[in-house]
Image (cartoon, rainbow, N blue to C red; front, top):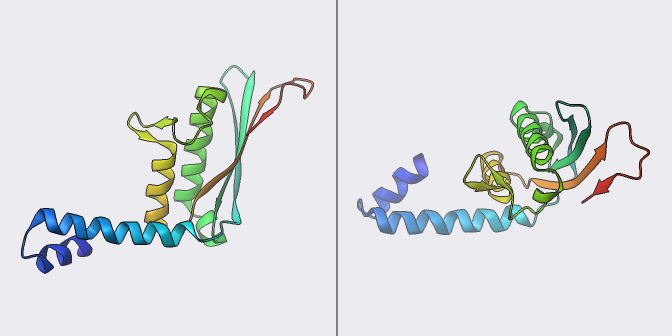
Length: 139
């Protein structure tokens, strides 16, 4: 909020110019975050209510501090649940819709801005519960 206020003060209340300045700041921040290495994280798994199909995801971030946070765990659970609901059809980060209007890439980027770290969906594995292992899919 203080960045918004500062931008408005800098541009004498001109909302359009302040918005452009904030967009430039967010682009710089996104570039810096994208260059980081995300090696910490968690693995989450979930199974459908009928006990027939499951998914396991690996969601990575830069520090174990963020990986252990309740917000990151909740994000990983949300991503795993969403992938489970749409199965293999939604593995693409640009075509997956979470919460109706956002793509998976946008949700991860929003959380990345919130914590200031790179967030990466590293792996997705779908499996048939009780299967022989031949039914596994990995992305």
